[in-house]
Image 1 (cartoon, rainbow, N blue to C red):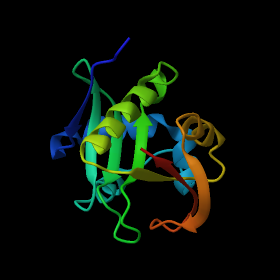
Image 2 (image 1 turned 60 degrees about the vertical axis):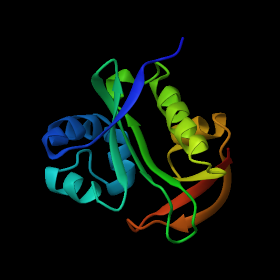
Image 3 (image 1 turned 120 degrees about the vertical axis):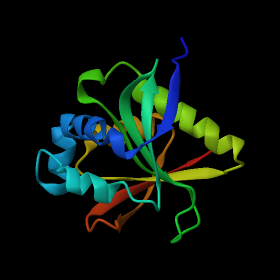
Image 4 (image 1 turned 180 degrees about the vertical axis):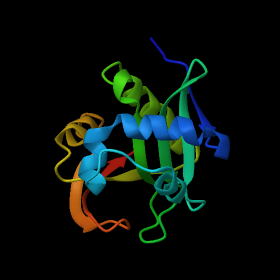
Length: 155
């Protein structure tokens, strides 16, 4: 069954929705910054104009958040910075469907590969990305000041 996944740019009016999605994922927030929730100010900083920030919509309702760079200036590769599904909706295949839609977009743009960074202790994310064909290649310091395990997938 193909899900009706669409990406819609995050607008200022969407901040409450973004905050609900992000703060539903307390385990991730604890790993990323040591606190279970993110403030509106932190989220506004995270929604930088240097990257694309999109709501993931399923049949019109927001179920997650996708953030990516078309080309990371450090290495020239497209980078998927965040794919997050609202915690109460996990385990239904929405994350895989959202990634598949994103990957299709990359292929249409002629991209040859994509990279991601995963917090080293995030074992669930490592299994998820590995199941989609991503392969670990290095551990590096991310722009947010934490180490991440870097993965790449050839398209």
